[in-house]
Image 1 (cartoon, rainbow, N blue to C red):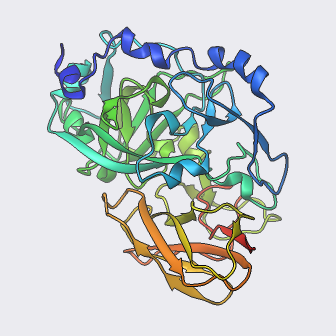
Image 2 (cartoon, one colour):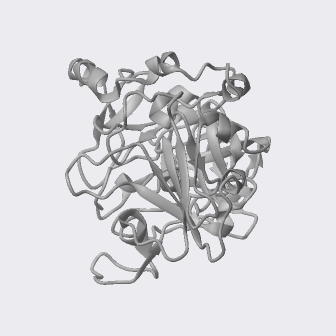
Length: 407
């Protein structure tokens, strides 16, 4: 048994991949039989119904946005069950085709570019690179909630379930970089995985982060998720973890680390995953853009869905989750039309984790119209009342509102 296998408690062999192999090919015939099981995501700009299915290997019931490459959304009720998202309910997002098997014994990570000595590292080399670290962090798609944009925007029409929180285990990226030695003049660190474009000429999915972020103590090359080897759909055998940053930087099935000495001109950094540099309207054209990087604060009511009935004249307990984004969550307030009530926060599992909140209303006097929760983090960032619209629906963090009906 290798050092990495000893640490995860899991044999990282082809057998460990069986539960995660086959993805889209195994799902298709089951989906055809289960299209009657649908969920309405309440999307204002287009078709809102999506199938629910447990047909994907290693997955519980998930909302299917696309079969190949797989795009699976977590049902919102999962987030009412705790701050850690189980592996089988964590959302799945691949830009390009994912391999259906990885030979762990033969897998190598090439570290090159502006380094003192290029190296090719085995999984054991990665495991031996430094201290083994655990970080609880939210993995959230940059387009989470995009389908709720009005007017409608392009891209996968996610509800709010393209997110999850897990405990990630690995070594610090800076310790892996030290195996090659970062050369002078380095500016960024770029990553590539084993996924491949579906069409000829399409750009490879590669992403980079600034060198100072790469050198943070909590940025990992991770091999475990919630105490188990990474499932295939979540990037087995290794993935990058950048707490506080959107998951587009959390490259899966890591195969290449490249140190750059200038700007990154690759497609998914220079042209995609970008937002307007200043607020715009849907009519604006040819505006400057900046990279999407860190996550803003958000909070959700998970105990009640929009339109749910509540008991007139009785106390009402509301619960949910909040996150601070790229900094620790400081407070969550229940808000309505011109009023706000502070919520009680639950246990703190770290600055980048979900945190439970709860508030009790002494008596329901009538319908609760357009209520929501507003998160703020320790840097002073606060969820806005109005949507900051952009043409890709990125980085949504407007207050999400529901109406509860008194009966």
